[in-house]
Image (cartoon, rainbow, N blue to C red):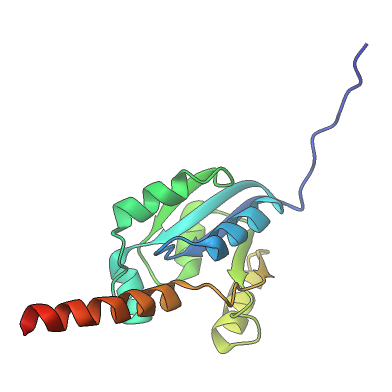
Length: 157
């Protein structure tokens, strides 16, 4: 006779982990892994090329359709959603998550505090995970730019 094992009940039903997910790296994977451990169903919000350019001043190196496919293929992600508006409350109206996950580089910042305040009204928690300092898409992009500068100079010369 086999024993009944009750399913693990996580603190949240639906979690939301937004990001550009450009130049996908271990920091992205860690956020998604940690997020999924906290919810029954994880939606990853993949920021559109236009939204990334609006927020960061530059377009992602990897086009949206490819970033979406990469994120959608991660085993911790149950669904991927294309984020096309800057207001996370507008996204919440479409996805209806009960927790949003962010890197702890947002904690204590004006944008993080605004996010917490805006979502508290709707009963949505903001949970921060450690930001992977040693690896970031910005650092990877700088390294790629530095490598391509000599090539560009050589082609011009």
